[in-house]
Image 1 (spheres, one colour):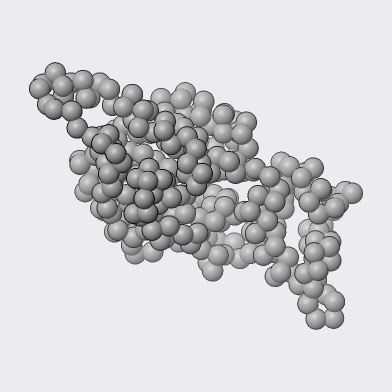
Image 2 (cartoon, one colour):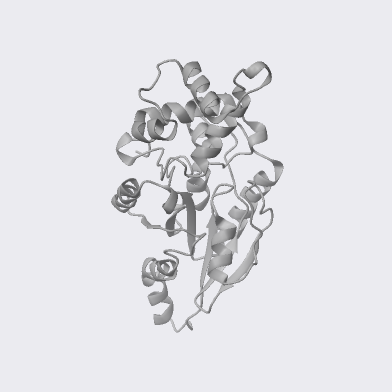
Length: 286
């Protein structure tokens, strides 16, 4: 399964981010706590260069809590401040402004010494599609300003949004990179909903998800699908799930399309509990 998705508006967004960089004090990079490495666009490092950055691990409620703690320590070791949040529920958002002030303290102290009047922090929010940027902005602004949706690619234009008197946010469309060098990264993005399902092979994606669960969370997989043992043959596992859930077609045969959709849907909807698909000790982000 080869996964690529780089619509024209994303190329335009990359140019716009570069052009607007000089207008902001700090970059707020939103990533998915379930895939902190794979949901970081490597192009962002090239674009923002040495601009101060705050990393937000969103959807922390859907991720393995111990893994998230490790990722926050990992970023700290790299000299990057990171915070775990749940934008949907509004959890952890009060830390954003405070952390931004801490990161920018030296800059604003210098401006104050020069006689420049205090002003709101200007921040640019960046991140891949469907990571929760619009939900975060609406929460911070306490009103529905940014369009939201479960479909990747909803936000397609930049806009400034005031967050009280202390911060102004520049929203940007989600940007994926033109080519995934590692197809496993593509699968992780796909299994967490960052890529449109119409571009995916759900059979391959479901097999990837089941293999991941078998390796990392075997007890949850067995409990969810009432398995006494994990079959070695993936076809046997598909058959078991299909018959257990009634995903059958003509002649009482298991409908593999339905099984694939079911598996992917249940992984995304937390039927297996909070999942983290990559841990810092795996050496991905070195």
